[in-house]
Length: 178
Image 1 (cartoon, helix red, strand yellow):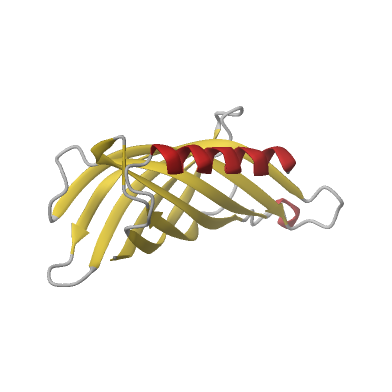
Image 2: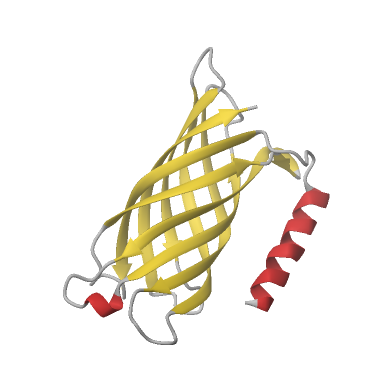
């Protein structure tokens, strides 16, 4: 846990000093549907929800940094002892490859720190792993309002050391732009 805290602190400090704008431009909520794949195929498809911040451009004008947090549950109908809540801390970069207009498609990636809260009653009921998300979608501005929609599809590598623990996720989000 101490290593995780030091990593998050160091990464946050580097991000603040490299970012062109160090204040949030938007805050958003998102919800979606998660479909576990590969080694996780025994778990049911489930709903996900999260919160994200648009921290502005990063290195180039069309590359945005959007850290966030999300949560979904992995539930196995045949074995309740394997049920797990997965919390992800995301450090995502969104590249708007056609520029930022009223409809701005993007592709992106981001490292994720996944925290697993297992629902079984033993002493080792928590774990964490480093993962990576690859995603694509579009930001859609709602004319005349400070709101925007985000629609995205994600391919999640939940543990980069065990590349067969993957999931696909479809999300829709609403952001309030400052």
